[in-house]
Length: 281
Image (cartoon, rainbow, N blue to C red; front, side, top):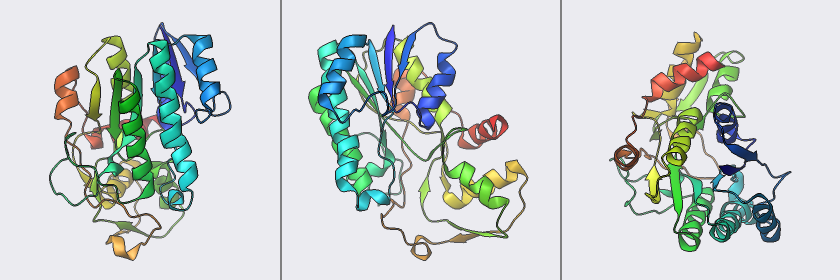
C-alpha cells in the first residue's frame, strides 16, 4: 500500500508520521519542498511516478487573519491545490482523504452542526476551504472530506503551545469566552484517518470529526493551565474586546454522529485528549 501525504510538516502530517512507524505501508511524506500541490503538472508527474493507493491531503493555507489580505494565496493552496490532488487521484484510481474545517459555518446556530447544515463562511479562510471541498467533490467521487476544529498537537504552532508559553511569561491573560467549539487533538484525527484506510472503506463522503464536548477559548485555556499547573489569572472577555481582521464563528460545535456510526469509532473527550497531549509534551 502506497500513501502520499501532503502537508506532512504540519501538525496532522507529523502525527501521521508518528503512527506510520507502526504500519507496514509505504508512506510518501511530502511538504511544499517535495511537492508543490499548486502546480498541476508537478502533481500529475509525482502521482504517475509513485502510483499511490491513497492520498491524504493535510496541506492547507491556515493563516485565518492573513487570508483576508492574501486571498489569491489562500485560493491557490486551498482550492487549486485540492483540485490538482483530486484530479491526480482520479487518474491514479486512488481515493483522497481531504481535511477541511468548521470555519465553513457562520456560527449563528446553537446546536451541533451536522454535515447537511448550510455552509456560509464569514471569513476568507473558511470560504477558500469550502471551495476546496466543492472542487474535491466535483472531481472525484472516491473522497473522504473530514472537517475538523481547533486542532492542536505536540508539533508545530498551536493554541496549546502558545498558552503554555504565555502562561509562563505573562502576569495574567485575557481570553475570549464567547466563541464556542471543540478542541481536537491531531493524533486522534490521525488515528481515524488510518482506520478509514485499514478498513478499505468505500463509505465516501463528507464527515465531521472533532473531540467530544464543547468549550470556549477561555475554557480551553483554563484546562491547559489546570493540567500544566500554571496559576496565573485568566480573564474571560467578549470577542468585541479582541478585534481581528477575520471574523470567527461564535458557535462551531460539530455533530459527529455520522463518522461514529459509519466507522464504528469512539471519540475521546477533549479534556482527556488534552491531558494526553500535555503528557507527550
